[in-house]
Image 1 (cartoon, rainbow, N blue to C red):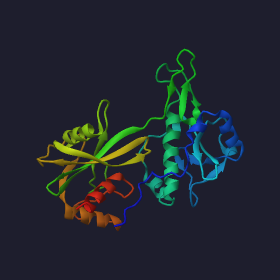
Image 2: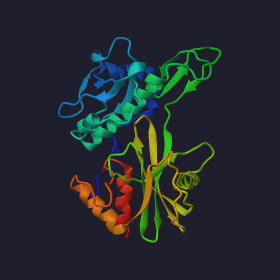
Image 3: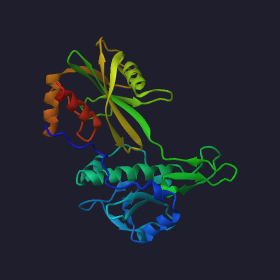
Image 4: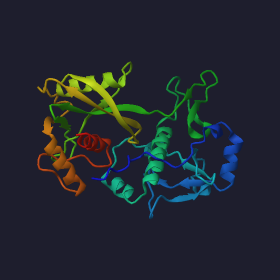
Length: 297
């Protein structure tokens, strides 16, 4: 199997941090033919690729968010959506269908734009005092307008651990009720305050499946803009395979042999479901976890 690139990673745009605080430089980029990413709410407009417009196409009064510079130095922007359009819903089938027609780099540009634009749409008011906020630093900050408060706010990225667990050549996978029929994937959960990555992996596996793990190691990461997560993938080992499943979190969890995982992954590459289970999509970092485990054998 050919390993696909990590979805939503690999944007070609230079984020140009040094320009963000330079209002004159940003204004010059806009005046010199800046490009505006066309969105409907937070969904991409696709016509053989992402659709880029002139900045004149932005709604009147819209806040323009600076996404970065291309190789020619042209500025790329996206307009902050209305609060009612700043959805936090998972990606729909129609969205995945639209993204399938884009290049890897376009998907990465869109992912960053969606996460950033959605944050602006949902953070119009200060969490400290309740006053309105305004865009700052080219859209990479919002400032409270109250002189007494003036709190700066920054786009959030929520860290999520996602991990495989190994015991004597078998892999622990679970399924949530919202998954397609037969789909099993890596366990996952948000990192909580005061936790390391390794501690979060161990806690989530213990909470969801009742399994104690050791030797947690980092594998890879993936931005996930639904709405603003960073998936941090790991692998761990268990000495006792006994399961105690939290049915509030998981519908089921099972140990699968290497042969079962390999067959399911080969079936997924053909767009089919495996015999023992249906493997995750190559768009998800869970696919990479399973693929790397098989390759390491």
